[in-house]
Length: 427
Image 1: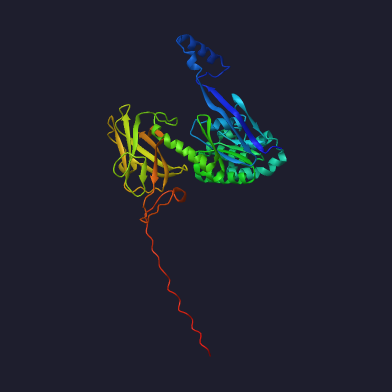
Image 2: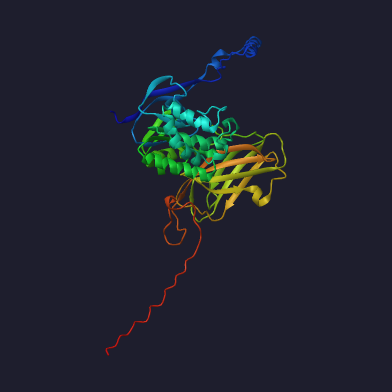
């Protein structure tokens, strides 16, 4: 019996951009034909543009390995898991899987909306070849973990996205499969449930099951996965120990930090006002990607008013460390209220008099709002490093692995008096 659980050999998946979906609806077919007749200058070549979601990816995973998969949105992570879960087929290459697979991918995948939670639990077990007696033994544990006992006999089409995730994870983690595929859908749940799920995944990994874990949370990947794979634009960039893979991934993000605006695939918003530039200034007001803990720093955001809206604007940003943990949140409206006169353009500048961050690399997500609606959101728009400093006036500064922020403080110490010795005299 081979010790290889998953073998990926030159796996590739191509999608056609703009290809009209096939439909049997007569009205839609007629509308499509009329559109083609009316637009005689229709460019067929443009309709057949393609994109490779995966391209010649190869690797092997042994039974019992826990492997993280990291990369930006659009890098091919979810496509890879969908192929392994047999949701979609590869364009070329092959994937060989030895063992039963349970998957936690998109919310609700694998559930029949008309069936109740109870019925879907048993259906998923039956699909995996498990007997009813086995499912009876696991049923209570699944329901207890999902925390939706009150709604277990309600059709899942009435579930919220959070309830979907709870039940889906509980089913995937408790069924007796050799391989678990987990995409990052846990963001839908609350923080307490996310922590509970990560604990369960650690338990699953310790049972010797093979786990593929897709996540943007580098801390979770480091804690759960001895090995990690870095994908970018459908290609395998690095495969090795999780620590070295994440180091390569973060270095890549740092090199792309200057391209965090128009080329950012995750950028969103209605465009009422737009970010046209951002930079970080050091203690002497010079643009720099290297800052020093305990010293002044500023973040500058230049915007342009697109539709002439003059009031009700706000800017906010969050700083994340290299493990994906938010360490601080800044909001203009919290200090000054929304901007009443926006003008055709301008600059927001946030001044930090004493940067309280340990040594490490950090990322900035920026968001502009107009009248409470998202106008522009740019994740990973800026990247900067905090270098060594003398924050505590002792010549030493802690690194990120020890803490997420630095707090000015002072110590006091008191010594208890020594007890008086007991004198024993001879009688």
